[in-house]
Amino acid sequence: MNLLASSPKTLLAGLTLSLLVSGCGFQLRGAPPVSSALQPLAVDCSRNVPEQLCSSVKAQLELGNINLQPAENADYVLNISNFRRERRASAITVTAAAAEYTLRQTVDIEVLTSDKVPLIAPADLSSSETYRYDETNVLAKQREEEALREQLYDRLAQQIIFRLAPLDRARIEQIKKDAEQTRHQDSGQP
Image: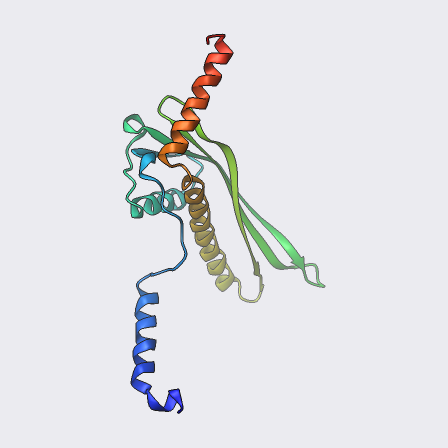
């Protein structure tokens, strides 16, 4: 029995369902959920962090039902700073023109409690992408580069969410306890 010949309605229904599911943004993989223990949370982006990156982080947190607040009202603060962007030629043609470029974006993050205990020590996160450059089609390549920049913002945002995911209530309490013990040892108190 030939499956394709016997059930075109089934195949059509399956194809329609897969298109609907992919069209609505459904994804099997994605950023893990951020613990509700990490709220209320403030997202503090320094001036040099692009608004698209900051917005992407906030949107992903809001999708995870994380309560975002201004820093003065938050128990935890996610600091995003020192954004760096690099574009360099990664392949050269025989005429010494760039044939490929690599885009790299890097950002520093840290998470602090309201009393400045670091839950995530300062860390660099980066994302990169390589694309072919065709000097005869400059406008299309500029649009492609801009689209890649947007993708890199989303990837960096997802990396930030991945870093926040392990911070559950037990882990946060252990970090605070360890910081308190270190503070007492440094001050000479038992």
